[in-house]
Length: 340
Image (cartoon, rainbow, N blue to C red):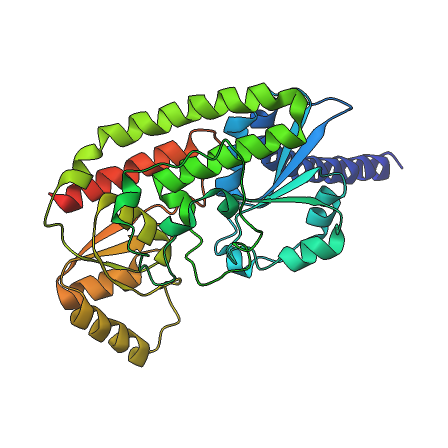
């Protein structure tokens, strides 16, 4: 009888250890975000902001630092991969139930927005793209709207935003605007203004944090101002259209944009077509996404002799308020090397 009792206790102990391990893992993942939001503070009468994906989340944790009663959650985790393939999970629906505002990028980036509308038809929505100057938007494929002056001019939207809610429906534009420092700042200004309107008790906090964050962005850009001043830069072939904005900001001519969003699964014919297109329209450098292994870019480089430069699309990483700054510094350093 004693042996059976001991055996029973042993199995019970093993079960508890296993359960604790599973719970500990889940808590660890949750605390990854919680560590950041604890600085913001929560209360019973809270204002909850839900962001659609990582770039917006890192933007908002900068704006809301020190704001009273503000709670922030993010929907698509940084490990999601391509946001276009993301589908709402049961946990997302629960997260939206008590949300006061949902922040999306717009421009067709979040194909799951219809599901968000269905789950919360009354939910307040903000679209980052509504805050940018439309003339600075690039068409899908990386071609601009003849706005060479746009790099030098920043637009002050403090008087209000007259944009109609069309940017998030218009898929003719490249939606990866967070990779253009000027457009990124415009989105920050817009979100700070709109959050202040929806959560007026923290309006001064949002605005103060916006100015502080802009100063950090300006300081980083000034360090790499020489990249923009270099003339006769090589043309670049983009293996992901997101980098069209960074190439545009730094003055690299885009000769082709191919959107190679995977590392494997290409047929021999598809690889040959890629090589032929790069040879026909290339002649400069290849810019690929660092979230992929580099297999395809390596193949293209070997066949064409073009240098590969891997950049960070700023869609994955730690939940850290300096994440965009850190990723952008690495990108600018890489492009500085490419321009030399």
